[in-house]
Image 1 (cartoon, rainbow, N blue to C red):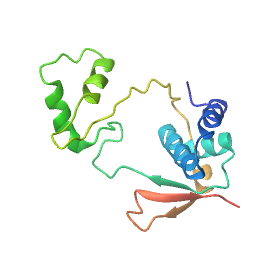
Image 2 (cartoon, one colour; image 1 turned 120 degrees about the horizontal axis):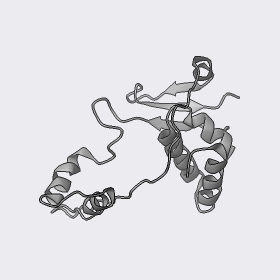
Image 3 (cartoon, rainbow, N blue to C red; image 1 turned 45 degrees about the vertical axis):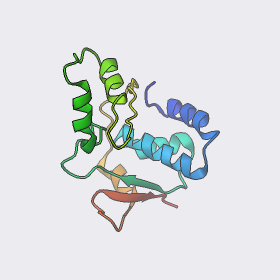
Image 4 (cartoon, rainbow, N blue to C red; image 1 turned 90 degrees about the vertical axis):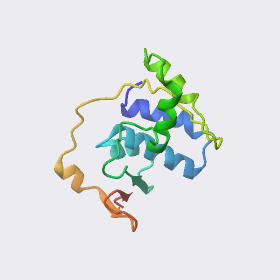
Length: 149
């Protein structure tokens, strides 16, 4: 499934049934973040949530936004798959998901097979229209997107 506004709207209608207002906001924020630049506007239009504030939290500099694996867990994951051929993404996801620690922590893993549109361009004037409010903590990484009345 791609990321057109119609597809996002369909996903939202299906997901929103059992979600609280906070859950709907979190879903919208995650969906917008997965789209990247222009995602907040697209999700807002697709869901009709334009009157809601969306909180955005980015990974700190130096961490990989493409590798969603918690860095502190990677040593446990690599120990778990040591000596096993990593022949496919399915094998890798299963090995990651089978990882546990001595303290009892279990890792959940799932393969994201969604197709993402490339080359979405957001103009400087479109960016200027977005009402950003920096968070008190690490405002370079965390901020809120406030609706323009």
